[in-house]
Length: 229
Image (cartoon, rainbow, N blue to C red; front, side):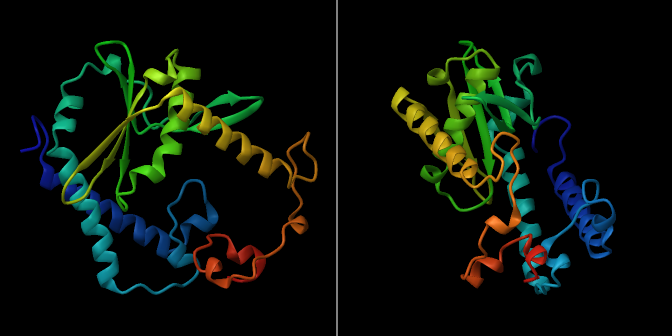
C-alpha cells in the first residue's frame, strides 16, 4: 500500500495533525511576532469566520491529494529513481532575464534516460491546464538558463491531485517560448513603469491608487495596510 516503507494512512494522519498545529499556532497569533518563522492564516488576521465544515473540507482535500499521490504510478517512478538524476527540489532560485532576476521554485524535476529534463508541478485546485502553460514556459526557461538544458527539449507535466489524479504533459515550442518571454518582458515593464526610482527598484505607496472594487479587498492579504482591514 503506497510502496515499500510508506503507510499512506499514517502519512495522511500526520498531515492532519500538522494542519491542526498550524491552525492553533495561527489562532494564537505567533506569526505577528515572527512572521517569517510562524504559520499564519488570513482568516485569523482578519477575524473571518469559517464554518467547521469548511475547515474539514480543506483537510479532506489535503488527505485526498496525498492518497492519490502515494498510490500513483508517478510516485512509484520517483521512488525507484536514482536521486542523482533529480534537480534541486523546492529550492528558491533565479535566472537572469534581460537584466532582471526571475525567481522559480520547482516542485520536482529530473533528467530522463535521454538526458533531457522533465518537470512536474503539483496542483490541487481546478483542472485548468491551459491557464498554467505560462508558468510551465517560465520553468522551461529557468531550467534552460540554470541547468544546461535546451528549453525546447524540456518536458513539463501538470499533475492535478485529488480523489483522482490527472496529468497533462507539454513540450514548449520555440513559438511558445517566445510568447513566454514576451509575457515576462511585458510584466517586468508594467512593474517598472510604476517605480519612483527605477535604478534602485524603489516604489512609493502614494503612487498607487486604491481600487474602487471592494470585492477585491475581500481576498487581499494586505488590506490592513490601507485601513480596509
